[in-house]
Length: 222
Image (cartoon, rainbow, N blue to C red; front, side, top):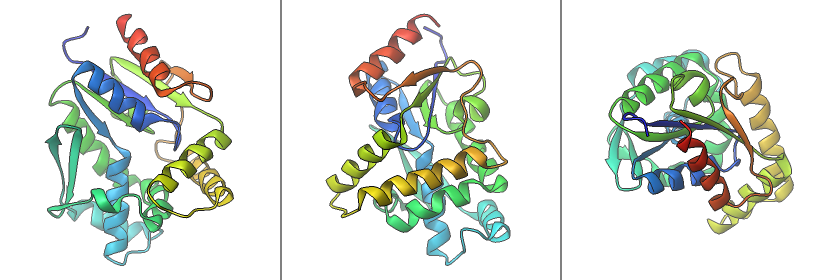
């Protein structure tokens, strides 16, 4: 196994990146970072300040001044914005609706990518997101792109939201995913796509354990 191990896992929303990435990190005994939480935290900070998520100029200014820090924890990284733990805010509906809009702004992405690369230099980790293999960690030890049909992903997200006590209509979730996919794949800066050297894994009919095992098997050959 490489001395400086980095595993990049990309894929669309609800493709299983976070649960799989966290499980792989646990199996290997290394750190885990879900970069999506960083964009969610930025979206939350945007809304908290009354900034329109479509106001590119205001978002660029905020990206240059916002104090966002990552602190190590037993289950990944704890994300602080202006000293406040953002964990309880990241799944709020307005944050869900704003995150892809703010993530499409180049200055915002540049600030997040710089922080993500800094974290990667601190030791072995699994990093998940939408541009990890293509932009953030181009030299990752292993790159994996998880994919699944939109219907399967919508079912997963719908069940997840019900688990958190949210009453959300399945059709609304499906429509929301369609919009997120459109924004993520069509944005000019770092659009969602598999890296040329990424291994694509279709998770439609696989359990989390099966996907984790697949990634660990791939790692053995690196």
